[in-house]
Each structure stands twice: as C-alpha cells, then as structure tokens.
Image (cartoon, rainbow, N blue to C red; front, side, top):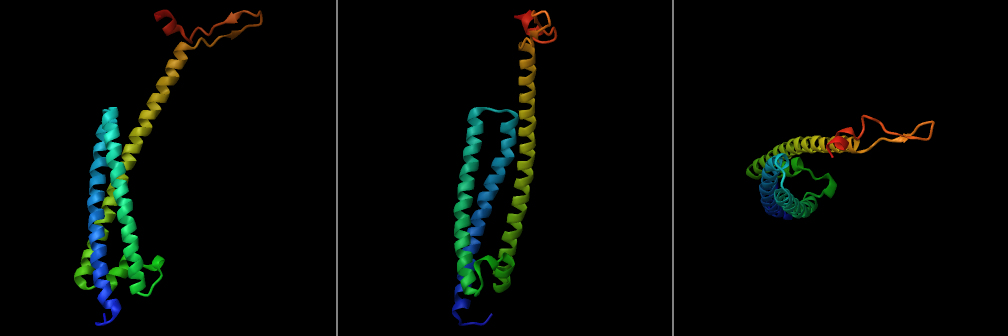
Length: 176
C-alpha cells in the first residue's frame, strides 16, 4: 500500500471497525448456536415455558445479528468507496488483500470462525427440524387413529338401513 493517501489512512480504521463488528457477530452466533443446541432438549421434553424461552433467546440473537449485519454493511460500503469499488463487488478476500498482514490474518480468522458457526448452526437446525417433523407426523398419525376409532363409518345399504362398519368406532364404543 502507498502511504499518505486518504485511502491508506481510512482503510485501517475501517478494517478495525469491521473486525470489531465481526467479533461481536461471532459472539452473537455462538449464543445462537448454544440456544439451538439446547433447543433439542426442549423439543424432546417439551414445556410451553421452556419453548417460549428458547424462542425468545433465538429471536434476541437474530435481532442482534440483523443489527450487526447492518453495521457491517455500512462499514463495507465505506470500504468500497475507499477501495474505489462498487459495494456489491467488495468481498472479504478483497478487503483482506488490501489490509496489512495483521488485520488480514484477523479478517481471515473471523471469516473462518463465522463460516464454521454457520455450518454448525445449520446442522443443528436440520436435526431439530427432523425432530419436529417426526413429532408432527406422530401427532397427525395419532389424530388419524383416534378419528378412526371414534367415527362410526356408517352409510346406507340397499334396503335403506344404516350400516355400520364393524371395524370403526368399535374399541371406543365398547369401552365407552
């Protein structure tokens, strides 16, 4: 980098600001990871209070991520101007290549940490989604079974008499 230009003086402070935001994002995503990890326990032994608390933690983390994302985008916009690029063209590798070696390493480490967290959160979300889908399937099948047991399944025969399906409603009818 050339020294003494406005770009050279502004870029280090923008890199520091970006690193600060990225580190806060990492902290928020780590909390989100913990919440998603513990969510499985809530899903296995559900209680409304625990589920609401888990959802509240996730919503708080997501709100934090959105706020930090806006801050990051603002800094990247300023970096694009400093690098004389379009905002949409600026990527982490571009920023890192324009930074000094220490900041470059820190940016790359933040990128690696965030990528790892994203993948781990996605994996846990997929597992939790599978658990929820299996639970919903179980509930639907249970409802269908109960409906089968309590409905009479009746219709009319050719003589006009009411015909009952002997397999439907029989268990609950005899028990009740």
